[in-house]
Length: 282
Image 1 (cartoon, rainbow, N blue to C red):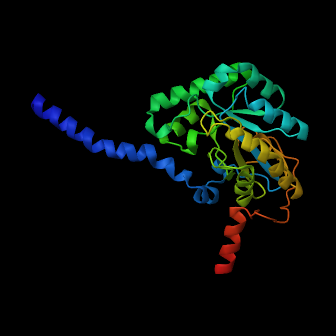
Image 2 (cartoon, rainbow, N blue to C red):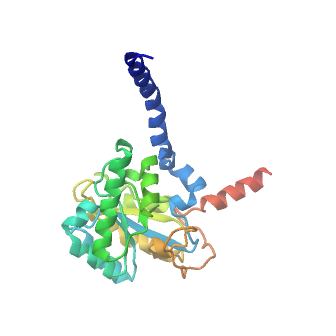
């Protein structure tokens, strides 16, 4: 084969391979669909002890807003998991250290809040590695958990997490608190609509990637969300105490293994619902 024909063949092979590579990179996007994820991917969803709720926050540490959340949580005797952006941590290392010292679990949200689908394997690895190293430098211990920006994983992100010993964890319910039209009541109702024992709540302690001032809405909604959890007998804490099977660094939760009675906006877990549906159809 002549050099020109060899070059044309190589070019044709590359063009043919590109769509396949794109599909491979985007395959994990299926986990973005909440109902499917909650039913088929319990660890990725953060499903744990039925008597416990994992409380998580994204996008900090923000010196303007995060201290307000820390004071509220401290007054309630609650610890949470904070998924930090490396770029934010680099600006406020002292605040991140304070969060860790107070007993909150510090996890990785990437260095920059950018869609991972648009990043190749090397850029993805570098982003996660720099964020992980920044957390390790500040807290003195390597983080165990990772949550991707926008909740969208990619094949490159999964591979990077494996190399960096990070476990991806998303959520079972959120407050849509980043929206400009969000109100404390809408955040509360959106969380409670999909909340069940063993669930993981996603909120935001910073507005660095959200509508300006949205963190104030979240802060005002949080006490009522915590009150609802308390009313149902659920303990609230970080993911490390959530009893998620296979989650690294997990410690046993003191929460009761029995599921509490359901109330407003509170549902059965997807596994219980599936079992009940299977029994009905048998």
